[in-house]
Amino acid sequence: MTMAGNLRKVTGLGTVGGLRRVARLARRRPRVDLSHPARSPLGSSVVNCVTYRDGVRAPRGGDLVDTVERVRKHGHGFVWLGLHEPTNDEFAGIAELFDLHPLAVEDAVEAHQRPKVERYGETLFAVFKTVCYVEHEELTATSEVVNTGEIMVFVGQDFVITVRHGRHGSLGPLREELESDTTQLAKGPSAVLHAIADHVVDDYLNVIDSVQEDIDQVETDVFAANGARADPGRIYQLKRELLELKRAVVPLGRPLLDLSDRPVRVIDPEIQAYFRDVSDHLLRATEQIAAFDELLNSILQAHLAQVTVAQNEDMRKITAWAAVIAVPTMVCGVYGMNFDHMPELHWRFGYPLVLGVISVACWVLYRGFRRNGWL
Image (tube, rainbow, N blue to C red):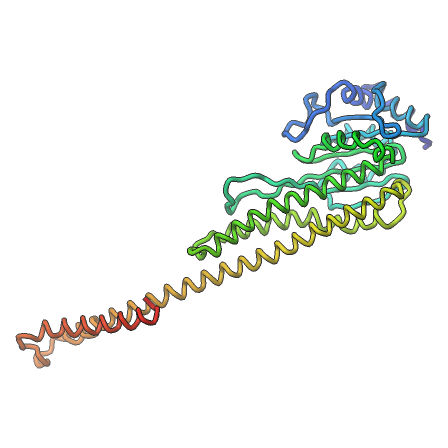
């Protein structure tokens, strides 16, 4: 089907209140930050729809179909459509309009995808895992440290579609920052893709810095005077949260290298150099995560060693006190056998003498164990 046919078909869908109604909602409503749980004040998944020509935001006019028709008629500029957790019905008309591949559409709607970059004809589909640090007063065995979301990006010659999942990672500030750099934005949709990748990787580094503070605190507690009594659950919780961060960061390495090295039609050659810089930052994040994982393993092993040492010390104390108590137990056991003929049984000073011998023997044992560090 030709592009014009696609436009006519989608326009037909719009007459029954589908795509055009969603687009009109996007045009009327102000931009909002969707970092809060609510998806949109109007209940729509469309966050914003803006046209850029030569790096400058074009005046609004018409619905989404009209906007795309004008961009393709003039042959320059592009449309940036932003959505937040769209449903299949909300995304169906948009997918038809921009001729998006069904597999990519399914991934964008369902979410929970691995970071990747795929090519479907003339369209590039990228998946980024977003992360944010969950603030907490004190790290516990159940504290959530890292929260993840997703950003899917469709990039074509004249359009960028961003689909965001999760309650964080709003692209509003990023859009404003890009609009202030018209030279970069004039390079087309690939500039938006680079800005999103750079924004996501920068968030990785920020979260890693915050996680490092938690690791430092756990390390301090473990090596404190009472480190053996520290809660190992906090260490395991940090390792689980670090694994969540690792799943978001590590798989993105190969796709960024491909974007920086392999020629892609929808990626401006000048932008590829910028992707190399993002790839370098991602490599730094990956190395820090690997170092944190090894450090947590070392902290956990040190904690277990401290617990073992503390248990050995407790066992030595118990053994020493048992040896001290064994002396009076033995003597009293001998004199408790109730025989008629026993030494000093009828002697006047026999009882105080036995108590004295017991006391001296216990004191000698106590001093010996104390001198050797057992008590």
